[in-house]
View 1 (cartoon, rainbow, N blue to C red):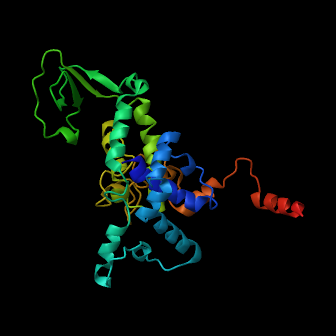
View 2 (tube, rainbow, N blue to C red):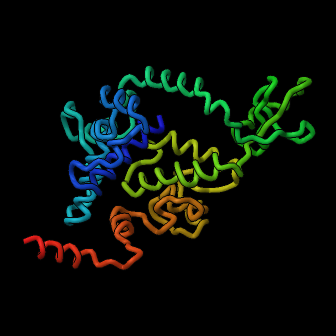
View 3 (cartoon, one colour):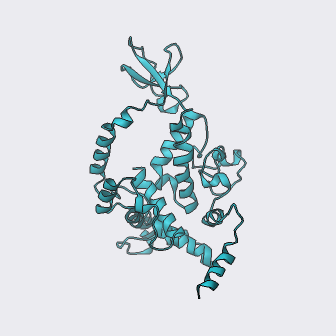
Length: 301
């Protein structure tokens, strides 16, 4: 759900915006290994396929074209409508159903999920890796999700477990809690998932709709870490104002208190596609690219 159903939208939109047509440095290697990539391509689940079916790539291209050439700001009409829209009264609702992440967007999703689950559960290399957890002494005050031989324990402030009652531990029960100091948190969260959320936000995606699984994972793990890499609530700008980011449209990544601790573009002041292009053009050697390109052209004759 996170890779094919969310991150592929971001990959496709970025490549269509930033790369010459026909150059696909990321999508050409999507999936990381050849068998899975060929299966996804055969089923029509490549980044290009999903970006096109979701309508998000088309939305991003239209939005950037407006920015560059001064079109009228009308985001509502940038989204594609399905062919069954018959009048203006239902056009807006039709757009809401015609674009973005939605159920059944990934073809054969159930089959692919089962294959992925089987592969991961039977991967000897992954099974040999210790879970990023700390053993908790039973004397500490924690609420438990279960009283099996190995129970998951989280702090009582964790909202996910507020509805659970304290349970008497069975003899031999081991309590564990997440070790947020490991690389599984610091690397994968701050310098992995947060990058995709930041890119999706500057592309103009609705994170609550188009990246909801990724957003859920980051919000849950950041609570365990005591951090705020994304705003915990997008319904108001209370947190943004409290963080000194000002009023206006709420930006879940840019307005977060601890975004500077991530590798999201917003941590470097990059909040738009134009900012991203200028950022990527920076050269540590101060090279004058225009003059060099013109010199090459002059010598080509």
